[in-house]
Length: 136
Image (cartoon, rainbow, N blue to C red; front, side):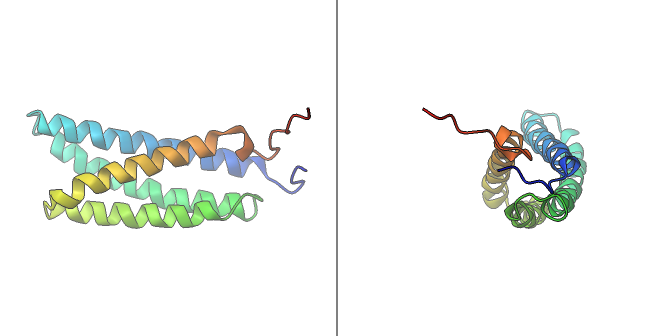
């Protein structure tokens, strides 16, 4: 049964922010690879993009809160957003301290989780009117 109090704009906002977060996360991997390939200017862009990624993760928490209350969506994306923000804060700290043994695998985990959230957010059942089950 559809949620009659659902506010579709909150889902649209959440999807937009999650999409931006995924694009920035992918950009982090590209910039890191560019730096490792000898384009040393990419390190400054990697640091700048890390700040943008962290700010977007904070915006994702706000968007998840709005989708949950008053939007009528699930509450767990708020917790996932908080975990992502914490992981990214740790990631930034590990990058500046050059702790690459933590920085690289944590970056891979962040990107994987970000893309899982992206796929989940864009699936049809995330919308205010879940897909109907087919009756046989």
